Each structure stands twice: as structure tokens, then as C-alpha cells.
Amino acid sequence: MKKYVSYLRVSTKKQGKSGLGLEAQRAIVEYYAKLDGALIVKEFIELESGKDTINRQYLKEAIELCNRNGHSLIVAKLDRLSRDVRDTFDILEQLKGRLISCDIPTQNGQMDSFMLSVFAGLAQRERELISIRTRQALEAKKNRGVKLGKPDNFSDESRELGRSKHIYKSSINPNNKLALAFIRKCKHELRSLAEIAQELNENGFRTARNKKFHKMTVKRLLDKV
Image (tube, rainbow, N blue to C red; front, side, top):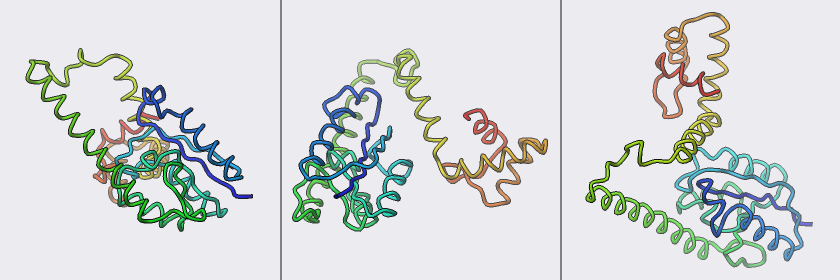
């Protein structure tokens, strides 16, 4: 029996209520697998933007599981995987072609590279259009005299979502994971924040943004976990 690893993604909590929220994605994937006589062995859910794949730890784990066991990765729609053409083909290469997107026709169970390039291009263009529409909307608000970035313009729910997402991204970032283990060791030895930052830099550690550590960077990282 064929075995699939399911990957579901939403950008925000609000998308969970949209036309392609988690439940809708799951229903599409399960229906496709049933028609194909396949078994879904594991499901990965990610809360992250489709702009790139850098911070998507669960996608990496899903790909590793597929490669370790010869499974295929399945997504409900290609833009749930990525909205970048280059990233899409990189993932396809990592999976050695074992990728299934329920919205793209396959030939004998194999993804057609031409069809993939068309759908990937459409997904990337949609991301670009979203960015354009967002900039236009912000410009329109600015012209109406709305103070952009003013805290009063954001709900408590939006601020909490942003904070939660930032903490989540920090917690799964590989650089932060390695650095945090080192920081805890140094803190146990009663070293100051400045000393810890200096030792991190001397040992080649870098932040999630590939910058050098400072004492406040160390403090913020400790405060988030």
C-alpha cells in the first residue's frame, strides 16, 4: 500500500476559518488518499507564511520522514507547500519526485514538471499580488490620515497572535536551539550576560538573523523560553 505524509499549513489563525483552513485541507488530502488507495501515516501542521521555507521546521521534519521511509509528501494545494517557484522545485528534488499536490494532475502517480512549473508560477504571482494589494491598502490608509503602526490600530488578539508567532519562530530556529543549550550551560556557571554573549560569538554562534550576540540578545532569548 502507498504511504503518504500529509503537510497542512496556514499563515494565521484566521486562515483556519477560511476556505482553505486546516479542516478543508485535511478533507481534501484524505479524500485524495482514499481514491488512490493510500494510507496517511503522519500529519504535520505548520503555522507559517508561504513566502519561504527557512523557518518551517515541520516541513523539514515531514521531508526527512518521507526520505527515511520512502513515503510521498502530500499537500491539498501547491501554495500550502510554497509560494516560491525555486523553493517548490527544491522540495521536489529533496523528495526525489515523491510529491503530490491534490490540485495538480499526475502522470502514473508522478508529478509532471511542466504542470508543476505552471502552478508554482501562479502561486508565486498570487503572493506578489497579495504584497501589492497590502501596500496599496496601507498607502490608502495613510492618505486618509490613519497613523500606521499605532498600537490603537491593532486588536489585542492581533498583537497576541504576532507575539505567539514570534516566540514560536524563535523556539524552532536551529541557531537559537543550539545557542540556548550553550546559554543555559553558561548561566549555570553563573556567567554574566555579556560574558555569555562574548563566548557565543567566539565559538561561532549566530542569532536567527545571522548576527552576533549581545547581552540583550541573550536575555531576550532566555525570556522567550
